[in-house]
Image 1: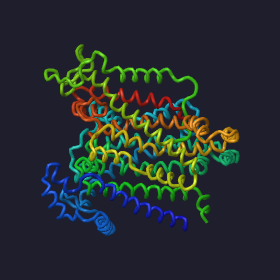
Image 2: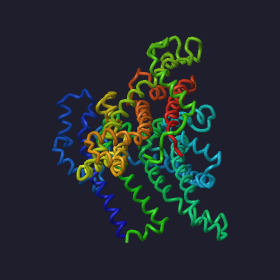
Image 3: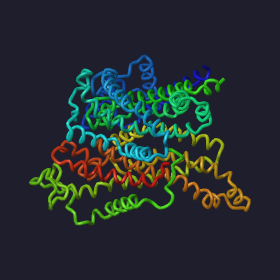
Image 4: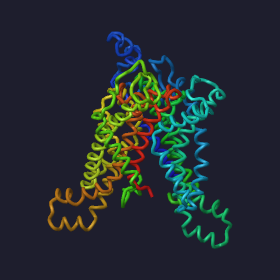
Length: 315
Length: 265
């Protein structure tokens, strides 16, 4: 427990430090909310008036302090460019990305574990090697290529799913659902390859270990050997991959969302970067950091539950 | 990232070698081949199917797709070579320096490397490109320094392992100067280990720039670049699928051939 508390405190301090660095980094970019609003050709007087109105002329450390206070109270700030509270802009987009990510995770992770387990038990089989090589292709090709190929295949040649998304960001889940499949399939292809390869390698090593051998020699049924002995021992590395890729599903989907014009957080990030809306960029970056820290923390805890040796190691 | 990766031993598969050779030839010779200019628009021949005049048809502005596809790898390749060079040289320098110096220098450099490994690469690139302009020099520098961190990490651990090896200690006992041991014994061996990582990075950087172009923040129109071509032609996929299939095939064969150099098992 003490160990866990230390881990949580470490994550929190890392977040605070990175948040401050991000604020200063975004602040150092040439341009702020006012230049974003008024454009490159806004007159200097107008930009100055806008800055004065939004307290952008305060020294940077004062603004960092005010911003931290607001953040601690749950106020993510205000986008001058979009004339809207940042939270109100982000929440519907976050919901859309989360739905897409959940579909991708459900498509990819359970099947990756099952296929990895199957292939790992016969690591030298030809089919296993072929599937493994094929998954290298999915890991190597960039998302925009996979996405465009899926679009061509499943939307144009075999018209199963709609291609370009025309649904607004605040559409209901039912309106959104038909548009989720293609981007979710793209993401699933990438994460399936990661998780499956890790599972395959892990199972291949674990099943040659003495404790598996001894279970078999004791006459334990093969089904039980897999469920009770191989699976719990083989899962920890996969849990880490699932945590990292799960975090990526929430924060790293810029390209896929851009391809299908899916109105999620990634699409919003690209828009915010393109119109240099710093007030909106910063919370999105922070959200990404928070998700990554939380994911690695929860992966640690899951691995602890799976591996009894680690539970006592810290004491 | 994965230390179990190493360069394929023995003979390289003919397919890998042939594909890489073809790509190198095309990328080097494209400007000298008798092709139509990549930016020559023909308003009388928009979105044409393949013909004798236009081998892969034309795009929405009536430009020759064949010529553009053959030229389309050059911008990313130039950036990938420049950035990989920067990341390899600075990564090995930082890693070897940290291992050799030890103490607080090692500690400080390792913390910097950890920090850089945690940076969200794509969003940082998008920011740099958006705020500082789509300048190939700036982008190469940014990519080079971002990707130096994993190399520095590998170079540091390799150097540390080498320092304890007998042949390095013998060279030291024989009275070799620090510099001669570094250049003669350590760097060649570090390079052999780091080379695989560098090969992988080359493809990641290539793809990062292509993705950036696809998002409209890498190569700027009318430059022929595969990622940008795919982005520009997506709306016309139904009329001439070759518009996206051709650059996808080029990009895929190049990247997979480079990955084919690396043995994964």
